[in-house]
Image (cartoon, rainbow, N blue to C red; front, side, top):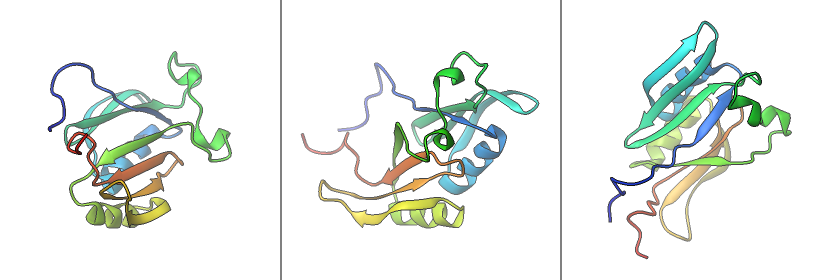
Length: 142
């Protein structure tokens, strides 16, 4: 079964202290591509980064912004996350190597998973939690 092409889409959103640097880092270390970046000088009001048919949106951690004021940054929680982002990748071992080379902090090492697939968890340059793996719940038997 393929990913649904109609109906609702779920797009994670994140805030970064230095969103311009984070965009470059996410593209380099994780393989995202810029789709849109709306910024004034140092403040990124809204950015859309794609990975295959998936997307994340992000902006500057500006507590004066309508959306960002409701978000908390990992450095305000002692590094604990209130949510994470899961990305299905075609070659998890190659992605793992790329992320490590890009400076990602591996928090759960790469391994085969009991539920199927292979994956790992890491933190990005500002401490957000990410899971990358080969398990595709859209393709898994139900």
